[in-house]
Length: 324
Picture 1 (cartoon, one colour):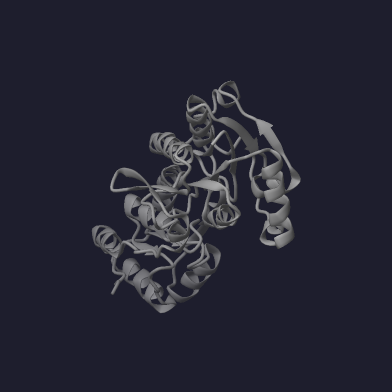
Picture 2 (cartoon, one colour):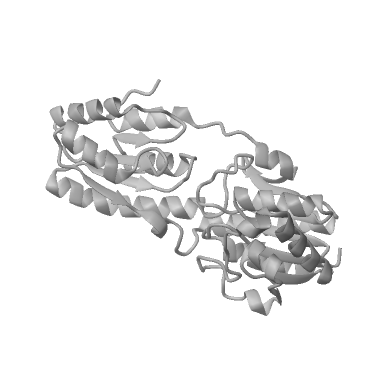
């Protein structure tokens, strides 16, 4: 192993820059040359390679986003696109690749592994939907960002004595909604893993109103209920004056939390350890320990949703919503 490439792919996540820094500096300390690929798999196809040094990754540990830029690349899903990317890696005499991204990026990395490259994947997605690891980079920062915003929203909701429906990201993983809902004391938390009928939500809202809880908070995952539509339903059927808020891409940005910066450091070190030993794998954290998992198995790992915490959060919030 003499020369490696590193790139970020898919949705940006706080901690990506800190992770690039870790990868580059641990690689250089192991006497590996490092090239960065701009714009992820698109850059692989379009031959956008740049040299990286200790200096080029200085003063980025605290920055959100990614200095290498990122994109979603449909062309890499084609055989022709994959051949171009692989040819460019060979042209640059790349022996190993570090891919920083989410589930789609891991699937792309598997293509490179099958083509004969050693690949170390680092989970970076605010959705936290790579289930082989407890945490992915960006998740903790996103949760803290949303929690702080909801704290501000609560002030207005209480002042006007009205419910507020807040839509958060997460795709088909309810972790952001669950953690934020638990931390702010939301009376209703809606996640894709637990099916809650519209009537149950309406009934719960009516009971809250009867109990005098006029400013209750509803946290909904983006793929479960859309905030605007659910607000319309509640106002019509539960007789409330709710307001909707879609937080959107604010969740993706901002300076990474201390936890995400520390994970970035450790994930980068583990990725280089893998490549230096001529191995592939998906880096992750389980029960506080950093480990490497077989890439294919990491992609296929099933989610076990934390129903216990959801139930506890609703009980503690005095919710009347029943979770079976």
